[in-house]
Length: 321
Image (cartoon, rainbow, N blue to C red):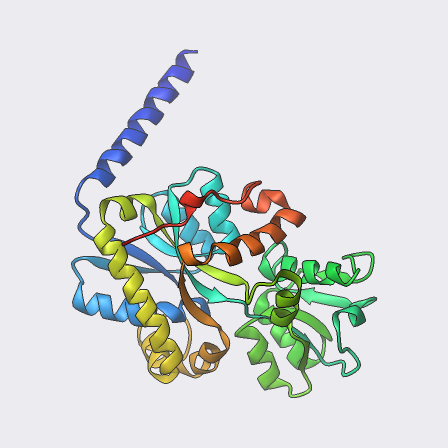
């Protein structure tokens, strides 16, 4: 009993200290950028705000979305990009985060070296390498197959044991015949092996199944303290990110050079190829509720725990004036 009381008092003091910390004026807003292709959409924002507002914003490069989660939860960063379902799960678990904007839309490809495969129904009996078990490519593909009456393990075999680059390399070498892979890895495989084709348009199949024009892949999120206590800085981040996405779309070569100079773990040569195929967008979260909920509903269908059991409430979607 005494130990429980000590723990509760300690927890209360910790939470109180965190509340006080975020109530005080913050010197710098910290934003994470994922190294590699995922970070390319934020390169111009990172470069520009570091140049114009070095005393207000700082950028921290991280290796993966898992690190973004950890740094958001411990308060080390104020904003970053996460997969949509991960952000929803954190919010439903009580994490103090809010969705700011969709910054990447559907970019999952079905690739094969089999010229006879022309549709999802042709996947019956095939062994398919899928990028990321219980991630967006996995559930999107399972959902679309189910629309055609195909069930995983019963009608086709899924293999999840390889990382994205390994799947791309396997396709390029001919060791893998069928794969579900996101960009830019899909394009990298095709460039190395002209025999690789993408006979199934995943986005088109999604449109038919859901009446949504696309599905979101990446969500820019922030701690609610940033939005509530520093809305002016949150708006600067949003406007800068919007401009950053536009710069990436308009001038991939310039962004590729910036990415290499910022040491984001991707060469300019690879970045130039990746950017046009990465489907970068910028749509504020409050305007993307339907598309986000359509995707999360698919996660709920296959694994409710992957999004925290329910669709996020409307307070998940930040509105910054």
